[in-house]
Length: 413
Length: 79
Image 1 (tube, each protein chain N blue to C red):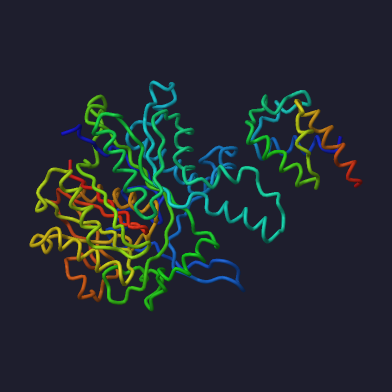
Image 2 (cartoon, chains in turn red, purple):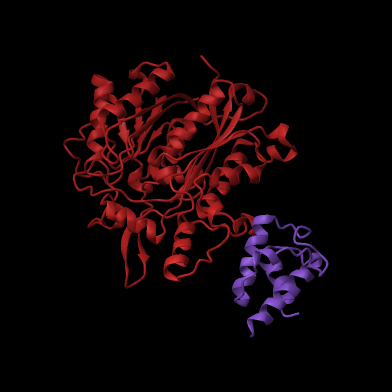
Protein backbone atom coordinates (compact mmCIF):
# COMPACT_ATOMS: atom_id res chain seq x y z
CA UNK A 1 0.00 0.00 0.00
CA UNK A 2 1.30 3.39 -0.95
CA UNK A 3 0.35 6.78 0.36
CA UNK A 4 -3.22 8.07 0.23
CA UNK A 5 -3.96 10.71 -2.41
CA UNK A 6 -6.61 13.38 -2.13
CA UNK A 7 -8.21 15.89 -4.47
CA UNK A 8 -7.87 19.20 -2.62
CA UNK A 9 -8.66 21.74 -5.32
CA UNK A 10 -10.64 22.09 -8.53
CA UNK A 11 -10.50 24.66 -11.29
CA UNK A 12 -12.72 24.62 -14.35
CA UNK A 13 -13.24 26.38 -17.63
CA UNK A 14 -16.25 24.36 -18.70
CA UNK A 15 -19.18 24.77 -21.07
CA UNK A 16 -21.27 25.31 -17.92
CA UNK A 17 -18.96 27.95 -16.49
CA UNK A 18 -16.06 28.14 -14.08
CA UNK A 19 -17.26 27.76 -10.51
CA UNK A 20 -17.12 24.00 -9.76
CA UNK A 21 -20.11 24.11 -7.41
CA UNK A 22 -22.42 25.88 -9.82
CA UNK A 23 -21.14 23.84 -12.78
CA UNK A 24 -22.05 20.71 -10.83
CA UNK A 25 -25.45 22.10 -9.88
CA UNK A 26 -26.32 22.80 -13.50
CA UNK A 27 -25.16 19.34 -14.55
CA UNK A 28 -27.17 17.82 -11.69
CA UNK A 29 -30.24 19.69 -12.95
CA UNK A 30 -29.71 18.25 -16.42
CA UNK A 31 -29.23 21.76 -17.77
CA UNK A 32 -27.55 21.45 -21.16
CA UNK A 33 -24.73 23.76 -22.23
CA UNK A 34 -25.05 22.63 -25.85
CA UNK A 35 -25.89 25.31 -28.40
CA UNK A 36 -26.14 25.53 -32.15
CA UNK A 37 -22.94 27.04 -33.55
CA UNK A 38 -22.02 28.09 -37.05
CA UNK A 39 -18.63 26.90 -38.31
CA UNK A 40 -16.96 28.29 -41.40
CA UNK A 41 -18.70 31.06 -43.31
CA UNK A 42 -22.32 31.68 -44.21
CA UNK A 43 -21.72 30.24 -47.68
CA UNK A 44 -19.31 27.52 -46.71
CA UNK A 45 -19.62 25.71 -43.45
CA UNK A 46 -22.20 24.08 -41.26
CA UNK A 47 -24.36 24.50 -38.19
CA UNK A 48 -23.69 21.99 -35.46
CA UNK A 49 -24.62 21.48 -31.83
CA UNK A 50 -21.45 22.24 -29.83
CA UNK A 51 -20.57 22.89 -26.20
CA UNK A 52 -18.39 25.99 -26.28
CA UNK A 53 -16.84 27.57 -23.20
CA UNK A 54 -17.57 31.24 -22.60
CA UNK A 55 -13.95 32.15 -22.02
CA UNK A 56 -11.72 35.10 -22.79
CA UNK A 57 -8.17 35.49 -21.48
CA UNK A 58 -8.60 39.26 -21.31
CA UNK A 59 -7.55 40.66 -17.93
CA UNK A 60 -6.78 37.15 -16.69
CA UNK A 61 -3.45 36.43 -18.35
CA UNK A 62 -0.77 39.09 -18.97
CA UNK A 63 -1.02 40.32 -22.54
CA UNK A 64 2.47 39.26 -23.56
CA UNK A 65 1.85 35.72 -22.28
CA UNK A 66 -1.47 35.48 -24.12
CA UNK A 67 0.31 36.26 -27.38
CA UNK A 68 2.14 32.95 -27.25
CA UNK A 69 -0.62 30.76 -25.90
CA UNK A 70 -3.15 28.78 -27.87
CA UNK A 71 -6.70 28.77 -26.50
CA UNK A 72 -6.20 25.38 -24.83
CA UNK A 73 -3.20 26.75 -22.91
CA UNK A 74 -5.04 29.92 -21.94
CA UNK A 75 -7.93 27.91 -20.52
CA UNK A 76 -5.51 25.56 -18.79
CA UNK A 77 -3.65 28.28 -16.87
CA UNK A 78 -6.84 30.01 -15.74
CA UNK A 79 -8.32 26.67 -14.60
CA UNK A 80 -5.02 25.88 -12.88
CA UNK A 81 -5.17 29.17 -11.01
CA UNK A 82 -8.68 28.30 -9.87
CA UNK A 83 -7.52 24.87 -8.71
CA UNK A 84 -4.55 26.30 -6.80
CA UNK A 85 -6.73 28.92 -5.18
CA UNK A 86 -9.39 26.44 -4.11
CA UNK A 87 -6.74 24.17 -2.58
CA UNK A 88 -5.13 27.08 -0.77
CA UNK A 89 -1.84 26.53 -2.59
CA UNK A 90 -1.91 29.63 -4.76
CA UNK A 91 1.43 31.37 -4.83
CA UNK A 92 3.26 28.25 -3.71
CA UNK A 93 5.84 28.28 -6.51
CA UNK A 94 6.73 31.94 -6.19
CA UNK A 95 9.39 31.50 -3.53
CA UNK A 96 11.75 29.40 -5.65
CA UNK A 97 12.24 25.85 -6.85
CA UNK A 98 12.39 24.20 -3.41
CA UNK A 99 8.98 25.54 -2.64
CA UNK A 100 7.54 24.65 -5.99
CA UNK A 101 8.35 21.02 -6.57
CA UNK A 102 4.85 20.39 -7.73
CA UNK A 103 4.22 18.17 -10.74
CA UNK A 104 2.06 19.08 -13.71
CA UNK A 105 0.32 16.13 -15.35
CA UNK A 106 -1.87 17.20 -18.22
CA UNK A 107 -3.94 15.57 -20.92
CA UNK A 108 -4.44 17.22 -24.29
CA UNK A 109 -5.49 15.67 -27.57
CA UNK A 110 -4.72 18.21 -30.24
CA UNK A 111 -2.89 21.20 -28.74
CA UNK A 112 -3.12 24.53 -30.51
CA UNK A 113 -5.55 23.43 -33.22
CA UNK A 114 -6.61 26.97 -34.15
CA UNK A 115 -2.99 28.11 -34.45
CA UNK A 116 -2.20 25.23 -36.79
CA UNK A 117 -5.23 26.17 -38.85
CA UNK A 118 -4.02 29.76 -39.06
CA UNK A 119 -0.59 28.58 -40.17
CA UNK A 120 -2.09 26.46 -42.95
CA UNK A 121 -4.37 29.31 -43.98
CA UNK A 122 -1.37 31.57 -44.39
CA UNK A 123 0.50 28.96 -46.42
CA UNK A 124 -2.22 27.53 -48.62
CA UNK A 125 -4.82 30.28 -48.87
CA UNK A 126 -2.65 33.40 -48.70
CA UNK A 127 0.09 31.57 -50.59
CA UNK A 128 2.61 32.93 -48.15
CA UNK A 129 5.50 31.22 -46.45
CA UNK A 130 5.49 33.90 -43.77
CA UNK A 131 3.41 32.35 -41.02
CA UNK A 132 3.83 33.44 -37.41
CA UNK A 133 7.29 32.55 -36.07
CA UNK A 134 5.74 31.26 -32.85
CA UNK A 135 3.46 28.76 -34.59
CA UNK A 136 5.46 25.69 -33.57
CA UNK A 137 5.64 26.32 -29.81
CA UNK A 138 1.98 27.29 -29.85
CA UNK A 139 0.64 24.13 -31.47
CA UNK A 140 2.39 21.64 -29.19
CA UNK A 141 0.01 19.36 -27.27
CA UNK A 142 2.35 19.94 -24.32
CA UNK A 143 1.65 23.69 -24.39
CA UNK A 144 -0.99 23.69 -21.62
CA UNK A 145 1.28 21.80 -19.18
CA UNK A 146 4.30 23.96 -20.00
CA UNK A 147 2.38 27.19 -19.55
CA UNK A 148 1.02 26.04 -16.18
CA UNK A 149 4.53 25.21 -15.03
CA UNK A 150 5.92 28.56 -16.18
CA UNK A 151 3.09 30.69 -14.92
CA UNK A 152 3.02 29.29 -11.41
CA UNK A 153 6.70 28.47 -11.02
CA UNK A 154 6.19 24.73 -10.63
CA UNK A 155 9.49 22.87 -10.90
CA UNK A 156 8.39 19.24 -10.65
CA UNK A 157 7.81 16.96 -13.64
CA UNK A 158 5.72 18.58 -16.40
CA UNK A 159 4.14 15.77 -18.39
CA UNK A 160 1.56 15.67 -21.15
CA UNK A 161 -0.42 12.60 -22.08
CA UNK A 162 -1.94 12.80 -25.54
CA UNK A 163 -4.18 9.77 -25.74
CA UNK A 164 -7.24 11.15 -27.48
CA UNK A 165 -10.34 10.88 -25.25
CA UNK A 166 -8.45 9.14 -22.41
CA UNK A 167 -5.73 11.83 -22.17
CA UNK A 168 -6.69 13.54 -18.94
CA UNK A 169 -7.89 10.41 -17.15
CA UNK A 170 -4.46 8.90 -17.77
CA UNK A 171 -2.82 12.18 -16.70
CA UNK A 172 -4.68 12.12 -13.38
CA UNK A 173 -3.98 8.42 -12.96
CA UNK A 174 -0.26 8.85 -13.54
CA UNK A 175 -0.13 11.81 -11.14
CA UNK A 176 -2.01 9.70 -8.59
CA UNK A 177 0.55 6.92 -8.96
CA UNK A 178 3.51 9.30 -8.71
CA UNK A 179 2.15 10.69 -5.44
CA UNK A 180 1.05 7.34 -4.05
CA UNK A 181 4.46 5.85 -4.79
CA UNK A 182 6.31 8.71 -3.14
CA UNK A 183 7.85 10.43 -6.16
CA UNK A 184 5.89 13.60 -5.51
CA UNK A 185 3.78 15.17 -2.78
CA UNK A 186 1.62 17.44 -4.88
CA UNK A 187 0.46 17.66 -8.50
CA UNK A 188 -1.73 19.82 -10.65
CA UNK A 189 -3.41 17.43 -13.01
CA UNK A 190 -6.17 17.48 -15.58
CA UNK A 191 -6.74 18.31 -19.19
CA UNK A 192 -7.36 21.05 -21.71
CA UNK A 193 -8.84 20.93 -25.17
CA UNK A 194 -9.89 23.64 -27.59
CA UNK A 195 -10.45 22.46 -31.11
CA UNK A 196 -13.73 24.03 -32.04
CA UNK A 197 -12.05 25.81 -34.94
CA UNK A 198 -13.48 25.44 -38.43
CA UNK A 199 -10.89 23.05 -39.85
CA UNK A 200 -10.98 20.68 -36.88
CA UNK A 201 -14.77 20.60 -36.80
CA UNK A 202 -14.87 19.81 -40.52
CA UNK A 203 -12.54 16.87 -39.92
CA UNK A 204 -14.70 15.59 -37.07
CA UNK A 205 -17.79 15.90 -39.24
CA UNK A 206 -16.18 13.71 -41.89
CA UNK A 207 -15.61 10.99 -39.33
CA UNK A 208 -19.37 10.67 -38.96
CA UNK A 209 -19.41 10.56 -35.16
CA UNK A 210 -20.97 13.91 -34.32
CA UNK A 211 -24.55 14.35 -33.17
CA UNK A 212 -27.03 16.10 -35.37
CA UNK A 213 -29.48 18.49 -33.78
CA UNK A 214 -32.51 16.86 -32.19
CA UNK A 215 -36.07 17.83 -32.99
CA UNK A 216 -36.34 19.14 -29.41
CA UNK A 217 -33.45 21.52 -30.11
CA UNK A 218 -29.66 21.46 -29.91
CA UNK A 219 -29.81 21.09 -26.10
CA UNK A 220 -31.30 17.63 -26.66
CA UNK A 221 -28.75 16.46 -29.22
CA UNK A 222 -26.36 14.72 -26.80
CA UNK A 223 -28.39 11.71 -25.60
CA UNK A 224 -26.26 8.80 -24.44
CA UNK A 225 -28.07 5.46 -24.00
CA UNK A 226 -31.16 6.85 -25.76
CA UNK A 227 -32.65 5.22 -28.86
CA UNK A 228 -32.54 8.54 -30.73
CA UNK A 229 -28.84 9.18 -30.10
CA UNK A 230 -26.90 10.10 -33.23
CA UNK A 231 -23.37 10.75 -31.96
CA UNK A 232 -21.51 13.09 -29.66
CA UNK A 233 -21.37 16.84 -29.23
CA UNK A 234 -17.87 18.28 -29.26
CA UNK A 235 -17.04 20.53 -26.36
CA UNK A 236 -14.07 22.55 -25.17
CA UNK A 237 -12.58 23.54 -21.86
CA UNK A 238 -10.06 22.79 -19.17
CA UNK A 239 -10.38 20.98 -15.87
CA UNK A 240 -7.60 20.97 -13.27
CA UNK A 241 -7.34 19.08 -10.01
CA UNK A 242 -4.87 19.59 -7.21
CA UNK A 243 -3.77 16.19 -5.94
CA UNK A 244 -1.96 15.90 -2.63
CA UNK A 245 -0.49 13.17 -0.51
CA UNK A 246 -1.99 12.75 2.91
CA UNK A 247 1.31 13.89 4.40
CA UNK A 248 1.24 17.17 2.46
CA UNK A 249 -2.31 17.69 3.53
CA UNK A 250 -1.57 17.31 7.22
CA UNK A 251 0.50 20.47 7.09
CA UNK A 252 -2.43 22.60 5.99
CA UNK A 253 -5.98 23.03 7.11
CA UNK A 254 -7.84 22.04 4.00
CA UNK A 255 -10.85 19.80 3.47
CA UNK A 256 -10.27 17.37 0.62
CA UNK A 257 -13.04 17.04 -1.96
CA UNK A 258 -12.55 13.31 -2.50
CA UNK A 259 -9.88 10.63 -2.43
CA UNK A 260 -8.50 8.85 -5.48
CA UNK A 261 -8.00 5.21 -4.58
CA UNK A 262 -7.44 3.36 -7.84
CA UNK A 263 -6.40 3.66 -11.45
CA UNK A 264 -6.42 1.13 -14.25
CA UNK A 265 -5.50 1.20 -17.91
CA UNK A 266 -5.65 -1.20 -20.82
CA UNK A 267 -5.31 -1.29 -24.59
CA UNK A 268 -7.78 -2.95 -26.95
CA UNK A 269 -5.19 -3.76 -29.63
CA UNK A 270 -8.23 -3.96 -31.85
CA UNK A 271 -9.35 -0.92 -33.85
CA UNK A 272 -8.50 2.73 -34.39
CA UNK A 273 -12.09 3.86 -33.81
CA UNK A 274 -14.24 0.89 -32.76
CA UNK A 275 -14.66 0.33 -29.02
CA UNK A 276 -14.02 -3.08 -27.53
CA UNK A 277 -15.74 -4.42 -24.42
CA UNK A 278 -12.87 -6.67 -23.35
CA UNK A 279 -10.43 -3.76 -23.20
CA UNK A 280 -12.84 -1.53 -21.29
CA UNK A 281 -13.52 -4.33 -18.86
CA UNK A 282 -9.79 -4.83 -18.33
CA UNK A 283 -9.33 -1.15 -17.42
CA UNK A 284 -12.19 -1.22 -14.93
CA UNK A 285 -11.02 -4.49 -13.40
CA UNK A 286 -7.49 -3.23 -13.07
CA UNK A 287 -8.68 -0.01 -11.40
CA UNK A 288 -10.87 -1.84 -8.89
CA UNK A 289 -8.04 -4.24 -8.07
CA UNK A 290 -5.69 -1.27 -7.72
CA UNK A 291 -8.14 0.35 -5.30
CA UNK A 292 -8.13 -2.81 -3.23
CA UNK A 293 -11.90 -2.82 -2.91
CA UNK A 294 -14.62 -5.34 -3.71
CA UNK A 295 -16.47 -4.58 -6.94
CA UNK A 296 -19.70 -4.54 -4.91
CA UNK A 297 -18.46 -1.38 -3.20
CA UNK A 298 -18.78 0.63 -6.42
CA UNK A 299 -22.08 2.52 -6.52
CA UNK A 300 -21.76 5.04 -9.30
CA UNK A 301 -20.16 4.89 -12.75
CA UNK A 302 -19.52 8.16 -14.56
CA UNK A 303 -19.57 6.50 -17.97
CA UNK A 304 -17.49 7.39 -20.96
CA UNK A 305 -20.72 6.99 -23.02
CA UNK A 306 -20.45 9.67 -25.67
CA UNK A 307 -23.79 9.05 -27.33
CA UNK A 308 -22.63 7.22 -30.45
CA UNK A 309 -24.90 4.40 -31.61
CA UNK A 310 -22.10 1.81 -31.44
CA UNK A 311 -20.18 2.96 -28.36
CA UNK A 312 -22.74 3.15 -25.53
CA UNK A 313 -23.95 -0.48 -25.61
CA UNK A 314 -20.33 -1.72 -25.63
CA UNK A 315 -19.62 0.12 -22.37
CA UNK A 316 -22.82 -1.31 -20.84
CA UNK A 317 -21.69 -4.77 -21.95
CA UNK A 318 -18.29 -4.22 -20.34
CA UNK A 319 -19.87 -2.97 -17.09
CA UNK A 320 -22.18 -5.99 -16.96
CA UNK A 321 -19.32 -8.31 -17.64
CA UNK A 322 -17.15 -7.05 -14.80
CA UNK A 323 -19.82 -6.32 -12.18
CA UNK A 324 -22.04 -9.33 -13.01
CA UNK A 325 -25.00 -9.41 -10.58
CA UNK A 326 -23.96 -6.11 -8.99
CA UNK A 327 -24.34 -4.28 -12.33
CA UNK A 328 -28.07 -3.85 -11.76
CA UNK A 329 -27.36 -2.05 -8.46
CA UNK A 330 -25.13 0.53 -10.11
CA UNK A 331 -26.11 4.03 -11.14
CA UNK A 332 -24.46 4.64 -14.52
CA UNK A 333 -24.73 8.12 -15.99
CA UNK A 334 -23.16 10.08 -18.79
CA UNK A 335 -22.76 13.73 -17.99
CA UNK A 336 -21.64 14.26 -21.59
CA UNK A 337 -25.38 14.58 -22.17
CA UNK A 338 -25.09 18.18 -20.95
CA UNK A 339 -21.42 19.21 -21.28
CA UNK A 340 -20.55 17.40 -24.49
CA UNK A 341 -17.32 15.59 -25.20
CA UNK A 342 -14.25 17.63 -24.26
CA UNK A 343 -11.94 14.95 -25.70
CA UNK A 344 -8.57 15.52 -24.00
CA UNK A 345 -10.22 17.42 -21.14
CA UNK A 346 -13.21 15.13 -20.82
CA UNK A 347 -11.84 12.68 -18.28
CA UNK A 348 -10.67 15.49 -16.00
CA UNK A 349 -14.02 17.28 -16.09
CA UNK A 350 -15.84 14.00 -15.39
CA UNK A 351 -13.45 13.14 -12.57
CA UNK A 352 -14.15 16.56 -11.07
CA UNK A 353 -17.90 15.99 -11.42
CA UNK A 354 -17.57 12.55 -9.82
CA UNK A 355 -15.58 14.02 -6.93
CA UNK A 356 -18.25 16.65 -6.27
CA UNK A 357 -20.97 13.98 -6.62
CA UNK A 358 -19.27 12.05 -3.79
CA UNK A 359 -18.84 15.17 -1.71
CA UNK A 360 -22.48 16.20 -2.08
CA UNK A 361 -24.02 12.73 -2.14
CA UNK A 362 -25.75 13.50 -5.42
CA UNK A 363 -25.69 11.46 -8.61
CA UNK A 364 -25.91 13.52 -11.79
CA UNK A 365 -28.29 12.25 -14.46
CA UNK A 366 -28.01 11.27 -18.08
CA UNK A 367 -30.02 14.15 -19.51
CA UNK A 368 -32.15 13.61 -22.60
CA UNK A 369 -32.52 9.92 -21.82
CA UNK A 370 -36.23 9.69 -22.54
CA UNK A 371 -36.40 6.52 -24.62
CA UNK A 372 -33.75 4.09 -23.35
CA UNK A 373 -32.07 1.77 -25.83
CA UNK A 374 -32.91 -1.81 -24.74
CA UNK A 375 -29.25 -2.69 -25.27
CA UNK A 376 -28.34 -0.15 -22.56
CA UNK A 377 -30.47 -1.83 -19.89
CA UNK A 378 -28.78 -0.70 -16.70
CA UNK A 379 -29.90 2.11 -14.40
CA UNK A 380 -28.60 4.98 -16.51
CA UNK A 381 -30.13 7.66 -14.23
CA UNK A 382 -32.51 9.00 -16.87
CA UNK A 383 -33.22 12.73 -16.93
CA UNK A 384 -33.18 13.49 -13.22
CA UNK A 385 -30.33 13.63 -10.74
CA UNK A 386 -30.64 11.67 -7.57
CA UNK A 387 -29.93 12.31 -3.92
CA UNK A 388 -27.57 9.58 -2.75
CA UNK A 389 -26.38 10.35 0.77
CA UNK A 390 -24.83 6.87 1.05
CA UNK A 391 -22.70 7.35 -2.07
CA UNK A 392 -19.15 6.35 -1.15
CA UNK A 393 -17.34 4.92 -4.18
CA UNK A 394 -17.52 6.04 -7.81
CA UNK A 395 -15.56 5.20 -10.92
CA UNK A 396 -14.96 7.38 -13.95
CA UNK A 397 -14.32 5.82 -17.36
CA UNK A 398 -12.56 7.23 -20.42
CA UNK A 399 -12.12 5.18 -23.57
CA UNK A 400 -10.11 6.59 -26.45
CA UNK A 401 -9.85 6.29 -30.19
CA UNK A 402 -6.87 4.08 -30.70
CA UNK A 403 -8.13 1.63 -28.08
CA UNK A 404 -6.66 3.12 -24.88
CA UNK A 405 -8.92 2.69 -21.87
CA UNK A 406 -8.58 4.29 -18.44
CA UNK A 407 -10.61 4.15 -15.25
CA UNK A 408 -10.22 6.04 -11.98
CA UNK A 409 -11.76 4.99 -8.66
CA UNK A 410 -12.76 7.74 -6.23
CA UNK A 411 -13.94 7.55 -2.64
CA UNK A 412 -15.87 9.96 -0.46
CA UNK A 413 -13.78 11.58 2.24
CA UNK B 1 13.07 57.70 -38.68
CA UNK B 2 9.83 56.29 -40.10
CA UNK B 3 10.01 53.04 -38.21
CA UNK B 4 10.78 54.19 -34.67
CA UNK B 5 7.31 55.47 -33.73
CA UNK B 6 5.78 52.23 -34.96
CA UNK B 7 8.30 50.10 -33.03
CA UNK B 8 7.55 52.07 -29.88
CA UNK B 9 3.81 51.75 -30.40
CA UNK B 10 3.92 47.96 -30.94
CA UNK B 11 6.16 47.44 -27.93
CA UNK B 12 3.77 49.39 -25.72
CA UNK B 13 0.48 48.07 -27.10
CA UNK B 14 1.21 44.49 -28.01
CA UNK B 15 4.11 43.61 -25.76
CA UNK B 16 2.92 45.63 -22.80
CA UNK B 17 6.26 47.38 -22.34
CA UNK B 18 6.20 50.33 -19.95
CA UNK B 19 6.28 53.44 -22.16
CA UNK B 20 8.81 55.14 -19.90
CA UNK B 21 11.30 52.41 -20.68
CA UNK B 22 10.96 52.68 -24.45
CA UNK B 23 13.98 54.79 -25.42
CA UNK B 24 16.23 54.70 -28.52
CA UNK B 25 19.15 53.29 -26.54
CA UNK B 26 17.13 50.48 -24.92
CA UNK B 27 17.73 46.94 -26.14
CA UNK B 28 14.83 44.55 -26.68
CA UNK B 29 16.23 42.41 -23.87
CA UNK B 30 16.15 45.49 -21.60
CA UNK B 31 12.48 45.78 -22.46
CA UNK B 32 11.79 42.21 -21.40
CA UNK B 33 11.52 40.52 -24.79
CA UNK B 34 12.89 36.97 -24.97
CA UNK B 35 14.17 35.46 -28.22
CA UNK B 36 10.77 34.18 -29.35
CA UNK B 37 9.22 37.58 -28.67
CA UNK B 38 11.96 39.29 -30.67
CA UNK B 39 11.29 37.06 -33.67
CA UNK B 40 7.56 37.70 -33.38
CA UNK B 41 8.19 41.45 -32.99
CA UNK B 42 10.26 41.49 -36.18
CA UNK B 43 7.47 39.59 -37.89
CA UNK B 44 5.04 42.36 -36.91
CA UNK B 45 7.41 44.99 -38.25
CA UNK B 46 7.97 43.13 -41.52
CA UNK B 47 4.22 42.83 -41.98
CA UNK B 48 3.60 46.49 -41.26
CA UNK B 49 6.18 47.78 -43.75
CA UNK B 50 6.05 44.90 -46.23
CA UNK B 51 9.73 44.21 -45.95
CA UNK B 52 11.87 41.25 -45.08
CA UNK B 53 14.69 41.51 -42.57
CA UNK B 54 17.48 39.25 -43.85
CA UNK B 55 18.78 36.89 -41.14
CA UNK B 56 22.31 38.26 -41.44
CA UNK B 57 21.11 41.79 -40.74
CA UNK B 58 18.85 41.05 -37.77
CA UNK B 59 21.65 41.56 -35.29
CA UNK B 60 20.87 45.00 -33.97
CA UNK B 61 21.27 45.80 -30.29
CA UNK B 62 19.23 48.88 -29.53
CA UNK B 63 15.83 50.08 -30.61
CA UNK B 64 17.52 52.94 -32.46
CA UNK B 65 19.65 50.47 -34.45
CA UNK B 66 16.57 48.40 -35.23
CA UNK B 67 14.71 51.48 -36.46
CA UNK B 68 17.66 52.52 -38.64
CA UNK B 69 17.80 49.06 -40.18
CA UNK B 70 14.05 49.04 -40.85
CA UNK B 71 14.26 52.49 -42.40
CA UNK B 72 17.03 51.32 -44.71
CA UNK B 73 15.01 48.32 -45.78
CA UNK B 74 11.94 50.47 -46.41
CA UNK B 75 14.06 52.83 -48.52
CA UNK B 76 15.66 49.95 -50.43
CA UNK B 77 12.19 48.69 -51.26
CA UNK B 78 11.60 52.02 -52.99
CA UNK B 79 8.40 53.28 -51.38
